[in-house]
Image (tube, rainbow, N blue to C red; front, side, top):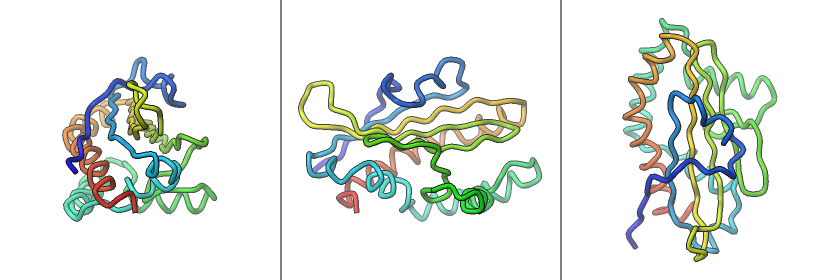
Length: 173
């Protein structure tokens, strides 16, 4: 089976839809789900999508963490530790901000930028089955945030596509 991850409009039904206007980055990617896959629930799909990154992404993340340290941007380890210390749930190093039956919202607020990421199970537009939509929205506060976003945006899009494709190929395990 060929897995197709396609870019879609940011979903209006998402809990982060109100973040899209005025955002410095807003994108969304979707992959089809079988009825059985959708029945796994949003928490399982989100953990499968974000909790098992490819080795090349871990290497990029390590480089990113070293490069951003002098600029006061939090490392992935710091983000995870802050979520745990604050009693928040997390998926990989992303703090869980809110959840519903069909959506989980992750994100962080920082002095340079704020971001939100959503994973949403929704019916497909053709009425045939469901899809998982991964949406990312970023709002920058200053030049450091804009420079950081400019540097990571091309990688971000590839990471999202790769994570969705890999999770679907693993059968969302």
